[in-house]
Image (cartoon, rainbow over all chains, first blue to last red; front, side, top):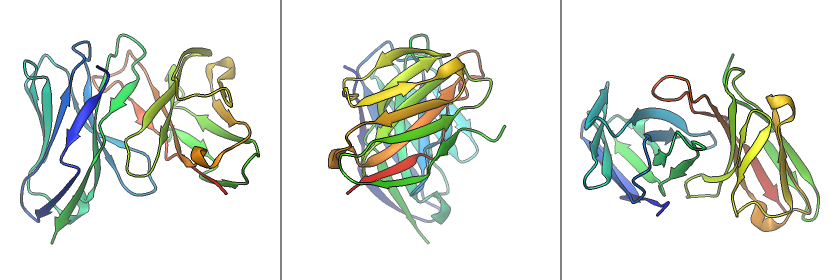
Length: 113
Length: 116
C-alpha cells in the first residue's frame, strides 16, 4: 500500500515534443505529490509538486495532472529540450505524519535534438 | 544558506571498515531524512529526525547502521562493518512542515559509497 508505481521506465522524445510520465499510488492518506529531476551524480531536485485538492498545476513547461479518484498523477513536459534529459521520479508523502517520501522507480528521459 | 550539504561526496572503503557521513541541513528546517539510492532505483527512506529526536527507522536500516542528530542541527550516518551491498548513494534531505506548499523538501548531492 506504500508503493508508488511509475511508468514508463525509459522514454525517448524528439526536441519540441511532449514527454509524459505516469504514476499510480494506493495509499489514500498521501497528500503531497512531488516530481523530482535527477542528473547523474547529483541529488534529486524538486521540479514541481501538487496537493490532492487541485487537478492540475502548471509551472513553465512542466504540468502535473492529478486524478484523485483514479489515484494517478502524471508529469507533462511541453516543448521538451535536450537539457531535460535526466531521470525523473514521482513521489508521494503524508505531510502531517513524518513527511517521508515514497518514490517511484524512475523514468530515464532522453530528448533527441 | 546554500542548501543541504553532505560530506564527503565520495567514499571508497574496504569491506568490514566503518564509515561515517555528515549532513548539514537548511538551518531553519526541523525535519531531516536519510535515504539510500542504488543504481537505477528511486531513493528509499532510511530514517527521519524531527529536531534531535529520531522518530522513524526503516526496516532497511540494519543494526549496523546508526544515525544521530545532536542538538537538532547536523546529522551523521554511520555504517559499521561495511558490506559490498552497502554500496549506494546516501542522500540527506531536510524540510519544514510549516513551509510553503512544497514544504521546502530539499536534497543534498549525496555521498557515494563504494565498498571494495
